[in-house]
Image (cartoon, rainbow, N blue to C red; front, top):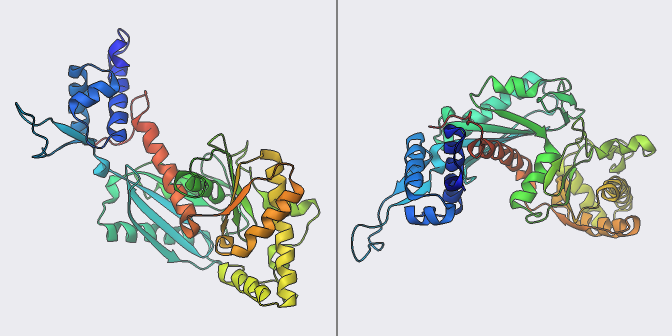
Length: 386
């Protein structure tokens, strides 16, 4: 690629060549210089110069010679690898009942995770403090310095604007109008990206979950109010204001009952509406409890109504069900049956493969995408190349 380019901005050419070589290094395990020349199409002097520059920045390290890799004549071939440990990325889930954080190196290999509970009624400042303390504890346990963080991804309930401001959130007290990205940015010296929790969960399932290799996906996050994240052609669909997939608002079109009422077996709202409470209702239904069976039927009717509306609009290949419903096998078959009834071309339906890790994992992927965009961008990188 770069070997055929002449003229123009030499610094631009160097950045293009660096991106080409870095891609090749990430795609191979420990390539030699000769193999890098062959895979990139660049000249040997160009590859050697790029390797030297990437090594100085800490992104490439030379692999010690293997005694079995000795040629008949001369020294062993010099081999290199992408130095994934040069930095780290962080994924954070902000939930009603807990904050969860996961940490990986620059290749996405997990380094550690940590979760800490939080009161669902906690005010915004207290929840923000819990986020900071959770991150601090994770870094301490992993033995990772905060200065090595290259990007932070955050998955949060609510409609999230592109600038990280929570436009609307009914799940967390004091969250509506909160400049979440800006508040968290004060704790880090790297980019902080904030996205809706269902959206990042969809990204996670596409990355390493139930939707791997499938580019048209709807992820349904069952919670206080069902939400959904959608990938169309492999790309996250956020909508104009970031509100795509807010299927929980469909009750405003004539289905007024909330999940707390739908799943109640006593006539009073089910509280708290969490995974254990919902699992108990489903267990009672399996045992033949009439009121629980009616509650489950009401809940599934509402869920199918909401999901079917999105399926009809997007026509996905796969629907992944997550949130607390990911632990409820009883959800799948009725959902499949009803979608077959309502949808012209019903999609395949499956449970989340990542379960409670989906949101934090998707937030991590968001951070990794930010790093890769900078590493492989033609423009001058703004990340700290150490």
